[in-house]
Image 1 (cartoon, rainbow, N blue to C red):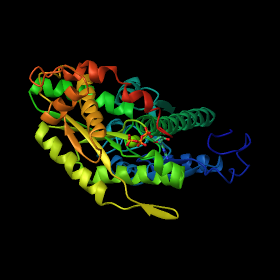
Image 2 (spheres, rainbow, N blue to C red):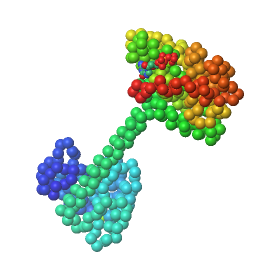
Image 3 (cartoon, rainbow, N blue to C red):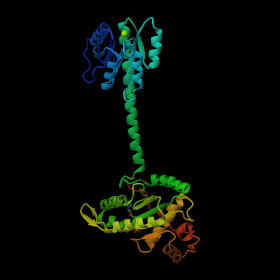
Image 4 (cartoon, rainbow, N blue to C red):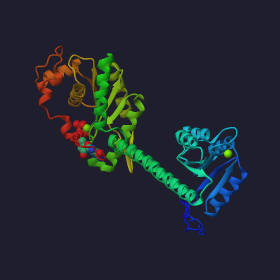
Length: 374
Ligand code: GH3
Ligand code: MG
Ligand code: MG
């Protein structure tokens, strides 16, 4: 009989392969003679065995050190085999353990009860050894397939997690990428409208960043971007969403935050950037950043895309009016700039989100490009 889980010839004389330990079978029977007989035969086939003389002991052994298969007698004192099968199959902390019930030939109801309780197969007494060998082998094959399936499922879930992370993350800074932020923004905006909760959006962009690359090289530029990301993380709250929106442009979504508080946050970040000395391999440098802040509720903002657009417009004004500053959407400064910029926008109408002056300029997104490694 060539048993499963043990490489062996039909007479079971070949020792198990070294890399694969032979399957361990728990024999549960209250008749010592039966136990001895089964144990001798299974061990002769190369399996490892352990034995239990009643259901209580069997359950304890299974829980402590789950065997690969249980050969389970039905009629036993204390807990009978059907109950043992039921408890083993109910215990979700256990791996899949095939159970073969040993039932009396004249008690078909035992087969029905055993299979109903979760046994995987049965064999009738007196036991025909050729049949026992075949059934044990078949059950161990199923167990191995089951384990392979579980391993693959676990691996697949791990890979899916990894894929999800990569698809949402900016490779250079480790921040969320634009796609992720836009998805969250959509959700957060809907949520805010539903619960009438404020939501602020900060767009920020490093000032004269191109010159970092031009003067110190791209590696130094990358180092600055990474450090800038860490400053944003240090200043934001756990619930805020920080993302890299483009090359050297970042976005922060601040749920439950009114425009004033969004401006305070941006001002704090601005100061932190101004005070920070960026270091890179071979040197250090100082840089500043500009910020545009918009917040819902605002009459000009009725759609989540408009929240980003208005923050971006404010950022544009911050750049135009000197950099290293925070500009609030629809503030006096914002509106005054639009007027000098040749727009007809009226601060009270607050239609500037879509004003010709800002609408005509090249969309900031166009020169953003895809961030390296995003
Ligand atoms: P401004 O103050 O108006 O924002 O000027 P700026 O130089 O920061 O802006 P500009 O748009 O002229 O240049 C942005 C530069 O950012 C150009 C691009 O090469 C650089 N950049 C974009 N992504 C990366 C990146 O991943 N790594 C590095 N090192 N540079 C990047
Ligand atoms: Mg019995
Ligand atoms: Mg810039």
